[in-house]
Image 1 (tube, rainbow, N blue to C red):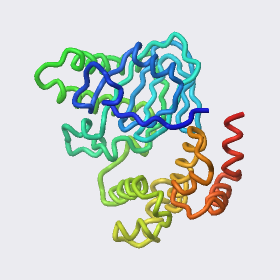
Image 2: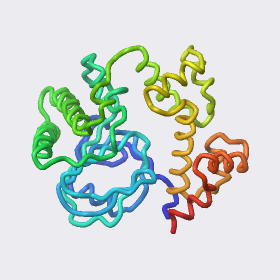
Image 3: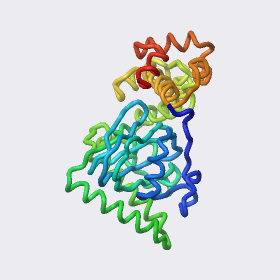
Length: 290
């Protein structure tokens, strides 16, 4: 079991070239070196991993996915991932930060960073035809990256927006495709961003409603309508997700994890975790170790 989660930035990969640590393309050799390390990583950037051949397993948080041809993975900021049993890999990874994606902002919410990736799945299996079309955009991005010229960053930014729209379209997720800009969605976006920032210290719906200057009941109704989950459950799920990441990918004790997540003692954290997952932190850890 890995002893820690390795935090990655684009700069920390020590690539021959990147756009100011904000954008890079990784190809077979560099990717295989990451695969072979078999470490757990948490990235400070978005990742698109395009699989063109080979086999293996990619674990994202507590879920396991097979690496297979025509499959494209999307890994969000702070998701923990790990590779195992990778053989004969062929493919490409595109890494980009929020600031690079927003280098050119069009005003369209479907392209805007804080809503463009709403509800996207961790992977999509493209049809052979759609995969060819998807790779055309990736090839153009590669060309602009490896042979940079005037306005290459701006062109890549626009190509990247088109690529993410294709990814979203192929997800067939109506809540993504039909996303519209209005005040309610603005509240939802803000709530999700606040939870990401404060889930360790703020665990009540009222805490977030206060920050959004709306009532807790109204916030809960909005979240329930748009995300099909209560605001309280959304907050709890984020806390549990982080707990699972730490239990799976570190050797921190349950006590250390409880303090890291803002609980006053191990007992409180254990009851919280078991109430939501139906198993204790140690049972969860042992299950995956086994």
